[in-house]
Image (cartoon, rainbow, N blue to C red; front, side, top):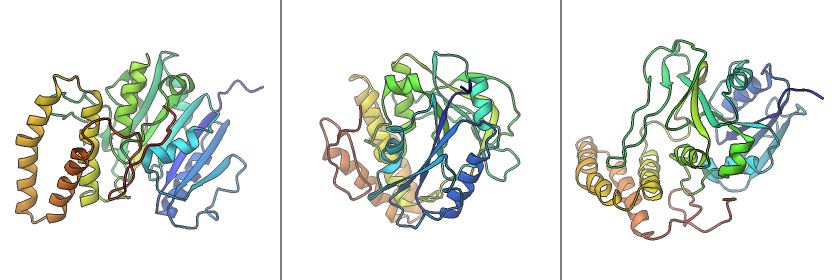
Length: 313
């Protein structure tokens, strides 16, 4: 029996089938030989059964009849994945052929549960998008992306970081069993930050490996500055802070958010006549006003009505 660990790779597809096909081709070209691959069609409305690569015996296509968001779509495959390690990658990520093997060889030990590689902007001469995160401030909800805009220099080291990056991350089976599935109360944005907190509180380390990079297109689904992106960002930011702040920290954060951060951003959008962004912020805030108590376990896309589901936690 092979001593290589089985690695499950999950690719979440929503639109841009040509990009998903390229992502899948690079996953199947990994030099790590023991792979099972799950391509999740998250109600894209596209015909994906003829995508190149799906005929490979290692690939399973899962299809959802509704858009479950980032967490819900990945959880469809996470419930069935058998690997000792599980990789979650966005469909707009192009993994180099040694990505899986490098991540496994660099895994620091059983005390580590969740690790991303560094992320670089696709076609940018190795300009970093991510080389780690600082912790979110409990009072402002802000943090920094480490290395952003710098040139990546490979270093064979793994180090702790506050949060993994969901574009390309690997989780151990032990951490997955202990921390549970991805939280489905976000739909988009902040899920990997929340999961990082869960993994850490389950007793595992969260880290970033600097020896291999994952090129990432970025913002293909919603665009870089759309009202929908603005809506999910603000709804997720408030969900995260409500979920993890101590009771005494919450009033400070919400005073900052409502009376300092938001007026500044809303003024900027008003001057730019981005009325859709103003409506998105108001709708995100309104969602929280309608849910003042316990947060729902699952939320749908913008304008969908939340409902309770068993999400595996």
